Image (cartoon, rainbow, N blue to C red; front, side):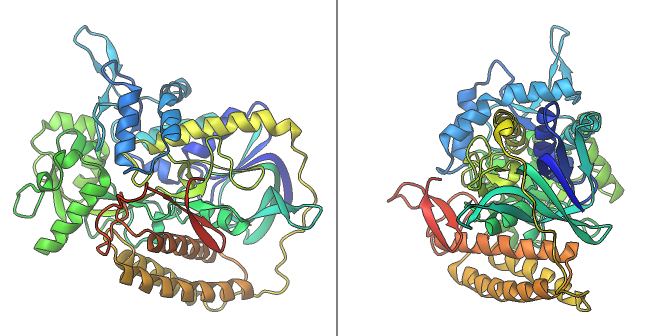
Length: 538
């Protein structure tokens, strides 16, 4: 099947849906989701969205906090751009109908309730209880479904981007993608004047993660294969507090719990965060995650505990209904006892290198949201800046596309997907085994604390895996599991190569061989170019 659109959006989270809505009046748009439309990281975001909405706060304070959390690698222009456009982004969501929490002021008027999270010097996180992502995702989906110009395609997974040929035969602009129809088990061609990658992050490359199953780095891997630069992939953020329970694999306990007074405890009930940072439980995520990892190893504990039970039960029920309900199902009464927690991979701070309009290195290919690396997060994303980036950069990219669209030629005729030389696989166990091996060695060797020797071991293993996967991919018909494994192996290689190149500890990258930041030279971005890497700005 060959279909053509003005704009092809690959991904149906906050970034992709926001962009589609912004362009819906002037373009024919297709939005792809490889599962149900709502299924993705946005749906599971608990804490909220950072924005300066209080007169006691300021954009300069939000900028300063973000720069501090980013450990010297943030692009101040990107930080300023996102922070200064935060209020309009929130107002758009309110206009769409997102029901953020309110509270009554002393004069009887209602105002939006703002909470505080790690790294923030003020209360500036607007939220919908502890299920902000769900409120945003379902509201945006409701709006998108009302537009006839937007075609929604569920259970479709992009395989690779398609580039037109220049007159000299070299690859040119992006003109679409080959897309695997999971239900129909066939690969279709979707052509477009503009393609937007909004596929989220790659935290499923690790054994333990807060992310849903679809977070397999698809957009990053496709952009890399197509010829885009990728930046700062060594900075994988580990959320400090994922519920530790044998019946649960990826339930996040929001940072807002610590923002509202939650205390991290060792099994003996003693606090420990003050020994690592003066901000205690409200230190940035990289510091808290490393502290928990250190203490678990020091005392030989399988987890630590997060205690909010000193707050009133009514307060807990109002602010954290999702967390209370999920813990209650497992027999944990968070109004009376602490929550067992461990760190887990949570957010990909690096990604496809873009500017502040979402442009990649390939004409008519954009990347937004967690897939992109804009310079906002630097070496460590500050809490609740992620959904904000999705909204602000989606609007910026949409404005740029709207301005340029009329001048972009329709996509040319493209050869359909050819599987005449492949057969059905009778060795699915290879995919299953390689998937497990990849995620295990990434957790063991490329996790919260690294060494050069561990990274070198990981590099040898990923090289072997990529060779096996390439041989398998060329011989057999594709499947969702194979495509995800291929993308994860690509992303793992990018992470390992980036980590090996950084001879210092900075932000989320901590290595025992170089435990301090390099103070001799200015902080440098790690920029990978197909077949090589460079350090500097993009």
